[in-house]
Image (tube, rainbow, N blue to C red; front, side, top):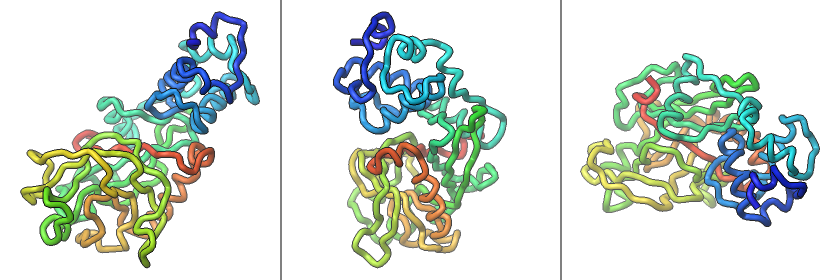
Length: 298
């Protein structure tokens, strides 16, 4: 059954049973994704995040506690008025420019006020000013933003970071014959809460890679993506801390990971992402992360 068919029928379907009908599940997921409640891909697997998203839609639509989807709910979900329930404004602020850049690239944005959007901006300072993006420097920015109830994007916090490998793993100790990994700009649903360097003295909580991403390999060791071959796969590109190293020297903190420079900042980052209701619903939830150059947000 499709969502359109349900909207014109007398049937009622328990939220817990939506996943038993793949066509209906995909239709519901597609609409929830358009509304900014459920991250893609639309796959028909109606798990905890999908159940959370549809329950949040029903609550906002004036049907809190509803445990079934029926004709009324289907019509609301399909209707244009649904898009006004979780609005999005794009002000001329740093946060607004980030969102505008994401939209331009076709990236997905969560519009639920309790959900986080993780973004890395390469070669930019905390006030949104581009920098020279010199190699081997913590001169990138890790950002967490939310869309508030009025629909305005807010930067919850931001930290000095690097989205690039440092000098050591580029020039001194190559971990791969094709060169150091440098994540390709884009958006990936590829990280879950876990442990970086598990079993070692430096082990700490992080967002660990759990799905394939695309990286450039810096074979010519020029600290630049231009002309570098790309590879897809699991590379252990985690989001972890940078051991409080000085801003001027990435050292061995990154062989291609997404690294927040300080321990304190990283702990704050993890505390924020773990408040996300999608993670609360499912501790194996896979977070989306967007990586963009500074030029995209100017």
